Image 1 (cartoon, rainbow, N blue to C red):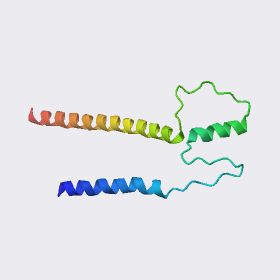
Image 2: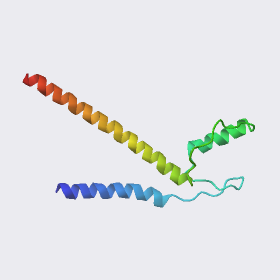
Image 3: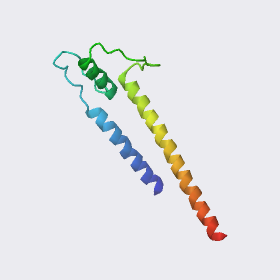
Image 4: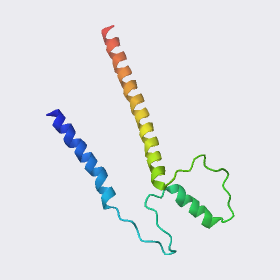
Length: 109
């Protein structure tokens, strides 16, 4: 029963991931004729806003690695977020387990 329940939940998660990707439509070009990127992030928007405010602005540094596309950059960001969430979850779980074991030892003593 538990195995079937896990399989159903996994299927629902897969459906929730796939449906938005299938439903998304590529937007029409903007008024300036430039192609609109679907997965453009806040970094691109900030760079464009700075360029309109101060066209003579020069960045302080260059990127160490430039991803080949916006999708790869989004994937790397998601991977970084997943690693951070995993680390925090592991730390929280081990801390609460350690505290629980300490309380049980104090009760026995």
